[in-house]
Image (cartoon, rainbow, N blue to C red; front, side):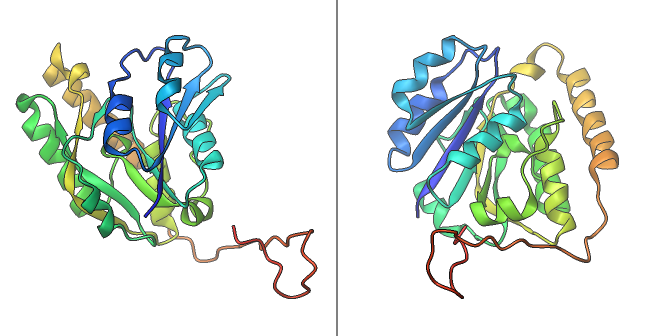
Length: 236
């Protein structure tokens, strides 16, 4: 199974140790760094990746979409830069369901945030609402069907993407292993940051929740170079 790993890099990001891990552990997969043009430090990772994309006026949504667009493989794995994938095993990908959005469970790199992780995993397992820090694996055809990440959003693009998927009946497949996420933003003010995160989650649910779609219009694009009269639809 071949994947394209898409990692967005913001203009302030400085820690690129994930790419050492990717190159060592997932060297058989395509690695794509989708980087803000304002981040000059990110050039350090160019030698570790198969594609290094520079994006003007980048947001995370723009970076994710650009990575998906240029990916050469049919399975897209969207991974946050501050993720630790040391617990993820190649055998986990054998459980991928190409008709669903696949995600992992969450751990933090600080044991004090056990309850936060339990809350995130409850939300994922029982409400079907994984977030981007757990990483998302989706087939390219399914990604195109759902629609790309909404560019106008400066945060919550992963949450909104999941609601779009739910509105057209796409389900979540939880891969029973853990992505370790950085606890950096919780260290100084763990309680207030937890309450802020919970408040944002609730407000985004109210904002992004969509009714079930009853009709879907699909466009089948013909290949203008094909000489066949009936079977010249583009595979994509």
